Length: 114
Length: 116
Image (cartoon, rainbow over all chains, first blue to last red; front, side, top):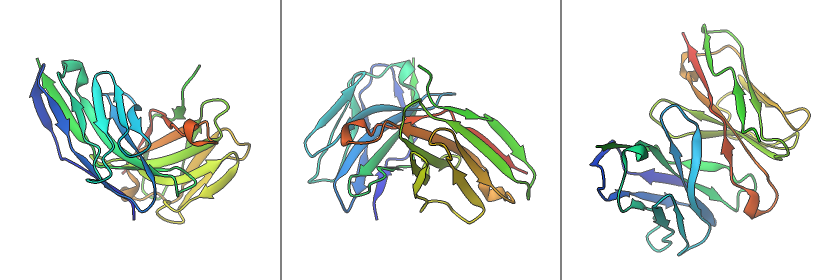
């Protein structure tokens, strides 16, 4: 079945450091890939998405490239800020599944220190 | 406009009690999803509605869980005879539905259920 695996946290960085959060997936069909973010006390928000191989999703300085050959969708940011502290979830939606339900990884907590 | 809202935000139930969790999706959104998020885990799919039709309930963990969306708008997730393992945050999400470009899901703040 479909699944998502992401690196365990917490990830602790100093402000302006480079961020990578790894995400790999297993899918039987044609997945779209997502990163969602959950800020403290808030609901899940879509951060970025990519719908086909080699697409790059980007938003708020974050980027992730859909790599079919390595079944990966790693999240990167060149210079993190304290306000980026949150839990990040990688997810997929398989277009063979007519409901487009999301399958999530277990989340990676990011803590950015001033 | 308003986002997805859920009520109550917090619910404490004694083991064996029935609970009902409400979701108000974004107006006009065809698709509605329920997810269960255990502490420290990612959300897990429970069930999916397209308008009033429940098209996928493959994620419901037992027959104690029941969901409805009778008029294609507000949805209720009901858990009968709650157990301690039901303690989790229950998330509702809605999407415009239809073609691939409108599948983005918008999440509510969740209902945190604690079963004592």
